[in-house]
Amino acid sequence: MKKEEIEKQLQEIVALIEQVDAKMEKVIADVIEERYAQNQAQLGRLEGQIAGVEQRLEKEKQSAALPLSSKLYFV
Image (cartoon, rainbow, N blue to C red; front, side):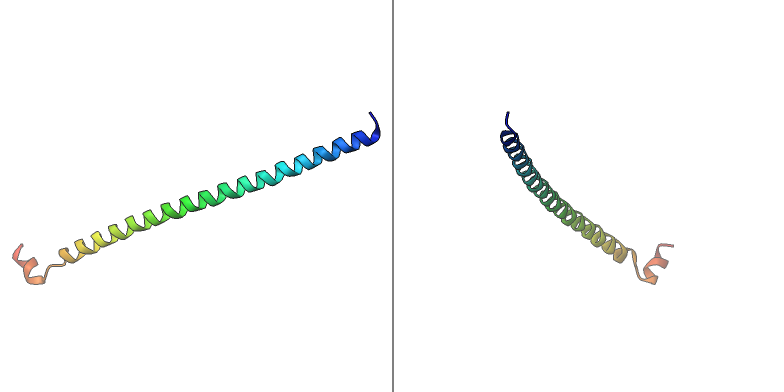
């Protein structure tokens, strides 16, 4: 093989490696974006659940706060 042929093959190999690298960067970026979107959706669901629990606790707190005369009645 001539030196020029080897250099040409090496350049082709380098070009292929660069293409693979660019594609891997895109795949990684896509996976990160997808995971971020999933985490945001999960966070929204958890925040909704927390808000529901807080509302129930507030309702229970309000119903437990009977007037003093009502509390004395049960004694």
